[in-house]
Image (cartoon, rainbow, N blue to C red):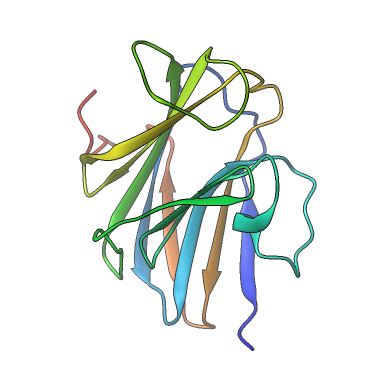
Length: 149
C-alpha cells in the first residue's frame, strides 16, 4: 500500500484567499484540499468530515462524501487551484449555511463545481502526494496565477 506524503499550510484560509499547486511529478497520484489541521494520516482524507477534496483521479469529496466524478483528472505538470470566496447565487451546499464558497481550478480554468459552507474558521491548505519521487510547488501569489479572477 502506498502512503501519502502530506503537508499543510501554516496559515488559516480567509475570504479571498486562493492558491495554486503545480505537480511537477507524482508517481501515484495526489490530493488537494481544504480542511482542518486535525486528521488521521492513515485515513482517506476524502472520507472525513470537514474536508473539501479534489483528487488526481477526478473525484471530488466534501464533508466525507463523494460528490461528483470529473473527466478532469490531473497529472504531472498540471496546476490545481483552490479558493475561498463569499457566496453569491445558488451553489451546492456542502455543509449547513451559505456564507462562503470553496472552488477549484485546473490549469487556470474554473471547474464546474463549488460548495458553500458557513464555518471557515479552521480551514487550511492540505496537499497529499503519493510516490517517493513526487514534486510539487505551491504558489500563494508570489507569482502570477494561471487562474484570472
